[in-house]
Length: 287
Image (cartoon, rainbow, N blue to C red; front, side, top):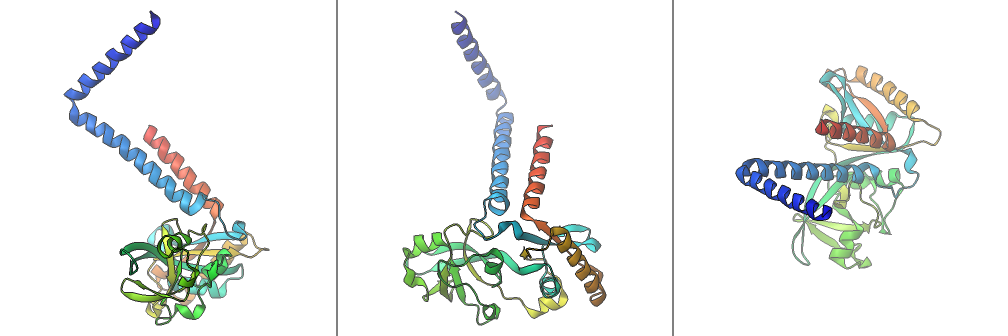
């Protein structure tokens, strides 16, 4: 009897809920949409955090990899992307990094020829990126510094997934020209299957070329930057070195909006910060 009574009560509750929803279809739709958006947003945020921060790194010495950001006190920005001018000075004047790299991640390409046209997401990167990360192509080679010059930059590295999907894992693709958005690029190498920098969606990489005028004006915060810390240096020492560089640059470039301090953040610290932000956001939604 107890089980029958329980089932009967449950059926009555369901019927009551259906009647209520029928009377308030707008409210019901809003509730369903709100729940769906909440789940979707949480999934999207976690996917981004996992791709950029939490996913195990296939790189050499990942504990010495750090992210570099700009702090722009005159603009009220504690953390912003990096501009090309200050990056050039940081790289030339620092005493704490083995190497630094710059990445412009917004680069979409249309791959044309040998099948249906395909829209691909790629990144423009300095040749130093692969030395910073301690990783090299499985076939072919990485970029050279001279390929960062306009006219020399029509070369491309393929992801392992793109190589497999589009070119049948044919090693002879190295040295072949492919059409990217109407411009021929020579394939010079294929990256390992676990290389997805800066995120899993990226399937090709081309050399980053920077307009000299952009370096001169020291504006345009369009870049991500990553560096490899020297073995005998700490994060505190790295930050102190970047502060000293910023003080010198402030005297050389006295325009207020160009006074940038390089902020050094380890990947683990960034992971902890994003995790705390997620917890606070989750708690706020619950309240």
